[in-house]
Length: 323
Image (cartoon, rainbow, N blue to C red):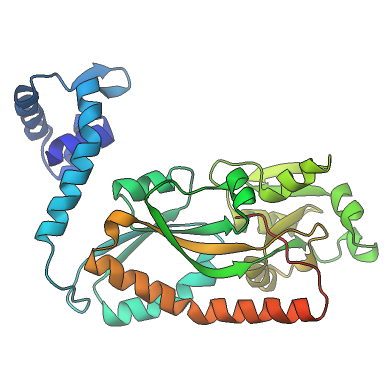
């Protein structure tokens, strides 16, 4: 059953064999027995690998549930981090690395010295990976307004979440940028050429949707795959990079960039920890989840206090792009 599940995910005998640490011959023999078991070919060969039959496709969700139930059934009665070699996988939006990891990594490795953390970029199929159990956690920005979230990112059924901290958007520019000697308002902002990070295969952020509602748009000169590249390119050009304020504060001190407020007010977004409901009874998963939440508690409280102070002095609502 495990072999069938991996074959369905990989679509290749070779890749399935590598993942299972078996020979291709052993996987082929298992596939032969599976075909007899289900009286169905299960897969047909194509130029792009193995294509599952309708029967195999119908088995996949049942297999997922079955293997999860077996994992829970055979799991230890307790989780001992001090002796565990558990391998946890996480997907994070890039701006979350300098913001969150320093707040909980030390605690994780102090209590679980042999724990392995395997991180990857947040992208468009992260929720699907959470559902399939391929990763344990994800951290990215989520728009707090449900209507806004419909335009940017709505988690599917079965995804659980908790807010880690809130953030706003600011603008990053190079030192000596011409706008520093001009009136900085929305008109000036929209006259500039911009650099945009493509997040989860999405070229448009909440800011762009909100501007479009008013018949406005930014002049995007360049799209890049990550935040660090965008910030670095700002040091050599007059491009404007609109980025989460926590990341902007960190990177501006590293690269000597200038920070300006975002003239177009938007509601805040929340950096959010996501996991799938089928992991909630996993003791190791629960242990790591609580460490992450506890480690970020002070950060979240500090951000909420800062927002409250800003509101009290009459500052405009903090903007967000939901990333």
